Length: 293
Image (cartoon, rainbow, N blue to C red; front, side, top):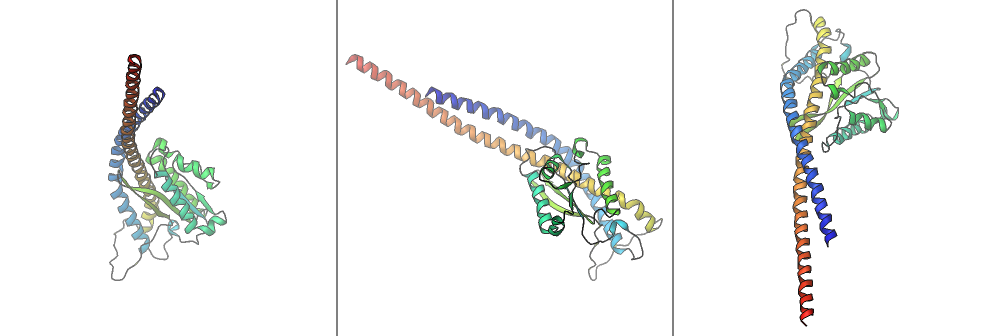
């Protein structure tokens, strides 16, 4: 009986220690989440407006205008850019990004994958480790972006993607990431990146008109790469906030589970202790009765 009590005491001590770790990680993630949430909240409206404006201009451009980054080609060579985190303990966050990337390859680009024409450019250590381990074609130059997250580092990845598209190395590029909604909710999306998506012309719908100074061609050549860089940076900021939100939620749930486990262990410990005391009292009374008899 004493051995059983000692075992339960050790388990209580172990769970309490684990709970302290999960609570500390939750607090750290909450602090990081506030900064990440502020960054994406300020960035998102600006990036979305730029992206909508670019798509509108490309859609209304004349056939004679050369827009190499909006050139539609047969989708033979595909580049997917899954944005995961560098660390785990974030619930199913990384698993969902990887799962969505695999589903896109299976459902949209199965023929290209069979020919070995699908390449992965992972951003984040978890995605890089997974796709490298399972033998996918991987561009391994940019998976460390989160170790020093800045616009310049993200811009290098965006520049590589754009130059590769211009060189006809890839015909389609898609970003796979999580849009941050709140700490408990992430929306996993696949977003077309290149060629620049055109807006569908709907009947009786007014097209936005812009006045260009200097000419539209000159402005597009200058602004198009910058807007595309901003689009990637927005996706990375979304993923960064989603990671911290997912980790904070996971650690909060782990702390709640530890509380429940501690409650059950303490009940088991008290029952075992009471049983041990009852047994000892019974032995004492039996011994006294035997002596008197």
